Image (tube, rainbow, N blue to C red; front, side):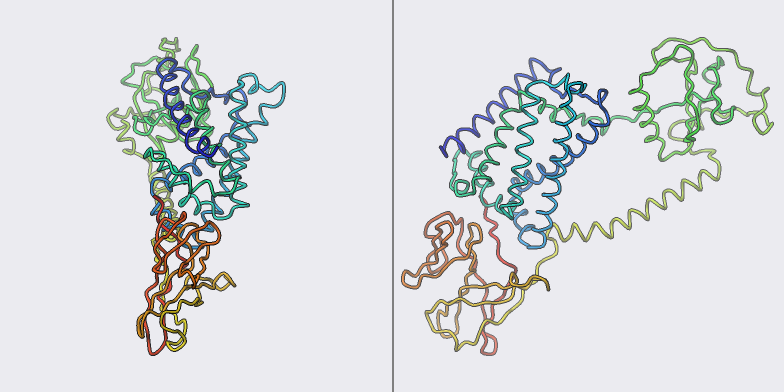
Amino acid sequence: METVLFIVFPYVAVTLAIGVGLHRYLTGRYTYSSLSSQLLENRKLFWGSVPWHYGITLILLAHLLAWLFPGAAAAILGNGIRLFVFEAVGLALALFAALGVILLIVRRLPTDSRARAVTSGMDWLLLFVLLIQVFTGIGVALFNRWGSLWYLSTAVPWLWSLIKFQPEVSTVTALPALIQFHLVWGFLIILLFPFTRLVHIFTIPLEYLWRPYQVVVWYRDPRRGPGQAVDAPSTPVASRLVQITDQPQARLSLPPGARISRSRFFLGFAAGIFTSLGRPLAFVPMDPLADPSGRKSEAKPVPDPHDEPHSNNEPLTPVPPDQYLRHSGHLGTPADISRRSLFSKLSILAGAIAAGVVVVPSIWFLLGLRKAPMLWLGVGKVSDFRVGETVEVAYADPSSLPWAGVTAKAAAWLRRVSADQFIAFSINCTHLGCPVRWLAGAELFMCPCHGGVFYSDGNVASGPPPKPLVTYPVRVNRGTVEILASPLPITTHTL
């Protein structure tokens, strides 16, 4: 059964995901997406989709990075505080994703729901499978502590063995049933990938990141006051300029007969705000008679701007078009707007500096760039140890905090090899960190949890441990045996 679940089923799931996924893309490319229901229930979709996508994306990214870079992940998680922080953040993201998927299901439950009308049977199945996977992940975080650390020494070697076509399931078969279920259920999601809307994860429009931004133009006559819409003028294109302004009270005025959909309007509005962030005021030449649909609109003639007084009773003076091109919109900007732009940029700079002061040290700590302390700690007098004897010695973990309590106590196995030579072994097994025992009669270290056995020199004799016991540097200082102690050792061997 273990062979079927942890070897056969993963290969079948991945093969179907790739094969059927490519077939669907080549034969039904227009179905290779997720049918959006934003126009049906926008608000409910927002509160379900945003938590779900942000939560599950960050969780999957953490799983992927730990799988690709297990050594770096082990170094980061080797510190107790960082491990706790990452576990807490992962649990919060899982709860966030669970809230999102529940809302996505709830919005489809009412019989009169518009979203339910476009929900297929495979959609219901996918939502159910995702819900189960999220809650099993939460269960692992709550009832099987430090799952992110176990993942490095159990699931990661198993996954790499599958990729190398040398399946090895010994690291996962000893795990609790809930974790095994979580692993197998993950491959079930991969199996469902080509048959459901999950394929939309490969249709992200990445080209939007580098395409030229769009300039959105307001149909507004700069001669009129704010909020006073006018009919489209009929003067030549070269002599007319339309202003892009950030005044919230400005009213959009389209030429007669012109129509624009609600979605295009809001997308255009957002793009206009985005492109004008660095230029509060800009002018671009455009055809005032142009209709978004490509038709020409009839318009009433407007007197020449030289003859019509402005709001301050001064005649308008045409501005050379080359001064109001998109890349020269700042020319001729009033002083108050330039001052406002300067203060805006200064505030952004100050906010960036403040954010850096907080974020950079946090990232420095979470990524393990700050090295843990290593101290020489005394474990007893030289006369306390006999040659050839292996005994357990205790010391205080140098990375502990004042509130650590009993968890700050650490131990090691110390052996006196000769009159002035000692060797110290970590008490933690290199498999999952369980404490090992010294069997003096057999001259072996043994892990009672998972059956790991080590020779007297620390090398692996049998069982799941991937490498020998960790050893500590030992020295004799003024008649006292000292160990160069570091934080509790965590194995970084995952392959």
